[in-house]
Length: 162
Image (cartoon, rainbow, N blue to C red):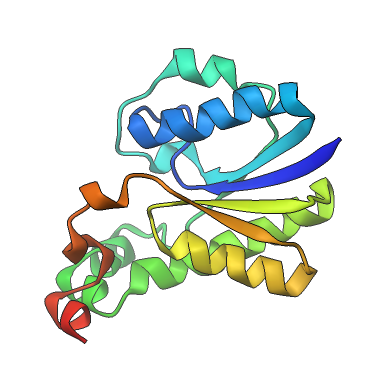
């Protein structure tokens, strides 16, 4: 049986289109001979709707949850402010935490392949890091990139134009 590690910020119990895509991969790939595990954000960080019916479909999939380092309310306000967005503080914190959780998942799951589902786009840098460190190939799952506002990919218009 091949082993796949999915890196996806969006995963049940969160609801939404991007969530359904990854969840269905995780639901159906075992039928094609894949053991699947997922690195995702902890559910209490979600500011989206819950989809418990979708969550039930993937309840047996091993999950490795990313804890964001900035839990202090004042620090969170700074990280999510215009200045924090301009300096990419949220993404830098999130990337570091995702790399650590990804390493734990790799040691436990011993995957043959890493699949990074984006957006958020920094997930690709996490996959690249893990791939290089552990010599595991990775693929990129681009969920509807044409539908995204390109300024959301960048911290500010200055970053976009640069």
